[in-house]
Image (tube, rainbow, N blue to C red):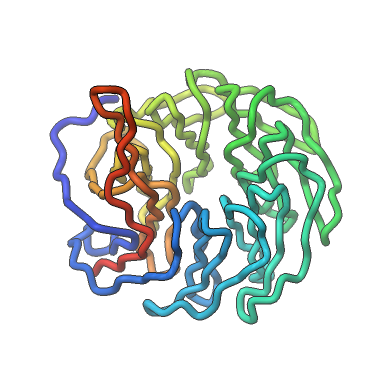
Length: 314
């Protein structure tokens, strides 16, 4: 489905008040990270966790960085919140760390992947799942790897826990796989490039975002909608409180979609690539940004303006 003409707002940053239809008045700017913000998670106590290429995780409340979690030796690329409120982080250093976000203490380091950990998810029963560039998915409980899921022929880029207890994984092999009890039950095909993001709608439908610039909505193994409008890779997805779908892209925009009809309602422009999305407890949408790289006509690369800050919009 193609987008028609859309209202576009020039927004500088990272938290938008969806409940007020993205009025776009910046009330806070959160500074601290020194590189791209590529992972976000809303914690149960109302704080926001952000992971960055600067190798740190930061915990924020009301515009203030409460603490910086240090321990990873490379970029932090994924975050997930466990049922007990603890925070999990995945890194290019091939490990997953479990944190007490309140104190900043690292409680566990999960080792086993042989390459970058790029995706995390939490199953309905509380088990943690990690996806890696080593082409595997691992299921963890109490620091122990219970299962290693093998089947993808490319890097695992995205994970999502399904309401029925099954797990979805997306990879650079262009497929989405659905897993149950360690076995691949379905392989969803349709994307033509890497699947970089996954999310689950309130009605249980699976959503996938891809480097092929599209968002697909799946039901019972079939693609029900293909959402078109982004002009570069779709890197992240989030489900808003009213059931609308948000997608972030390297085309410097966030788009808001009516998932039922496939209609794009709004496009929000930024000065940097959009790398991560999450919805805060009060319903606002947080957007993590990275640098802009522009390919010039002579084939050289130019670095554009960057934004590693967190901006709060009312």
